[in-house]
Image (cartoon, rainbow, N blue to C red):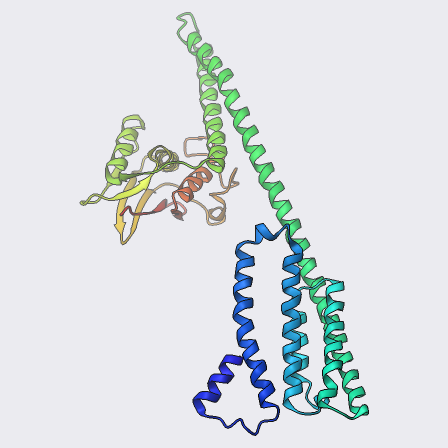
Length: 404
């Protein structure tokens, strides 16, 4: 403001010789111009080296108090220079103490120190500009009122900031507790799920041995098949739990991959193992399309989406397609099956989703698959969307960034 005022006067050649106390104001203006950049640079230095000065808090407090006092005295100075009787124009003085009280944070003793020093300076300077005892008394009373306002504003600002600081600290502590609990939960989940694999593998091995027994009757053979199926289902759930835990904790590496080749291999693998009644079609691009992906994780994504499409599509086709649009790689997995009801669509990516349903042939679902899919896609920096019409099919759309 002081620089702007000086430039305005210089550019417009405003006559200033007749302005009262112009010499005092000119000197004070130069002092402000000199002090302001110094204060700014020192502030930047303290901010950048805050960790170093945390143990020397008195240095920071002294700097803040000094600058606050300078701001208040500067506006007081303007009040004196405008007219002979400050009582008639205390606006600048008032603005200074209000702004200092609002924008600076002072403790109780610091606030009292500033108020006392400012009041003493006002009382000391006043006789140089006003000789009437009555006017000096009235001006000091006005200064006392304004300084009382300053103390009130400063205490309110301090209480407000302190309250917000305590709330933020409480939130940070709660967030840290939640993060720690989540890490512990995932570690326990990983340990438990991992340790369950061994007994399941043993059960399945025994079931396979029993299945090879030629004397096994048909009923018992059917029971053995049920045991093997239950083991496979349990192993699938364990894998989902482990995947969920690992995706929350661990990052994974990506590499630039030609997406056409990758998708074609995924589809060919599914054609070899899937039911012949379901035809899986792939529609690629003529030109190579590249994206930075983790092929193992993305294989998990495609397996999950194709598995769901097969599960809910009956004997109709499943289509996997690839597009390159601007800087995006778009992968669609589409089926023409039973679709997803509108009331379930908002929940299909939730963990243990209530949108999980049995497949057309009664396949069970835990509700983790699509949650894992979304986790993996997000860690690739991509997005996944779903479009579904009940009894007409579902399309999952994956959007990834194209590799340069």
